[in-house]
Length: 213
Ligand code: HEM
Image (cartoon, rainbow, N blue to C red; front, side, top):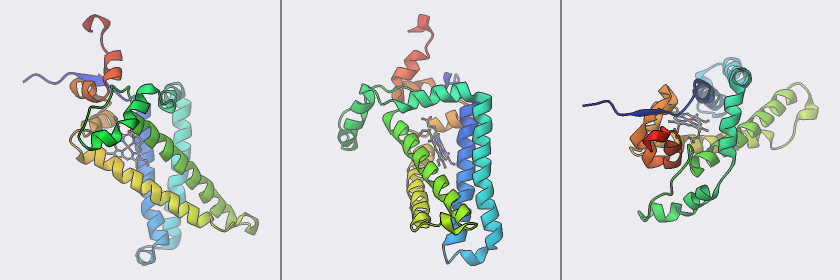
């Protein structure tokens, strides 16, 4: 049997940014739960959980900065690709209810579909809120002037919203047979061309050798 043809999907910088986010998110979530859920707080020392929590936030911020410095042009291009919802994306979104009833097919998508673009935007927005409220909490421990009612609540609800998003994301990446082939892209950088043609036809076509079309 011949090996399936593959095409390049994610650069090393895109993959590094993704795994930096995933790794630090898991540490922040686990230590956040150890710090705030009464049933879990006896499991660890509070200062240790807090040091890991804040440490992961620093690692994510510093790592993102380093990756932007090393690979900024490409990451900016990816951001531009993701920030626009074009006509096909709107058609993709409008078609969701019908597709959930098993009716109709999704219109051809670019490298990212509208769901992925929205997931990225909402995840980034929630991370910004988590950072802003986290910084306020950190400052509030040092200066009462930075203590505002609701800061902790917003931080907790933001994390909860992220958990819901990430749970859906993990289902698509690890369980759903139709989307699971994407995992190879974020781990090794390339994906099966046949899968790309089915799920991201406009992108797959743009990646074809012009003499091959
Ligand atoms: C074990 C954990 C994770 C796995 C296996 C995983 C898997 C993946 C895969 C396969 C893709 C590429 C999708 C494609 O090629 O179309 C991706 C993209 C992405 N991941 Fe993850 N991921 C994980 C954790 C996370 C976490 C914790 C976050 C956020 C807090 C996250 C945020 C994103 C975003 C924003 C994208 C780009 C857009 C999208 O595909 O929705 N991932 N991930």
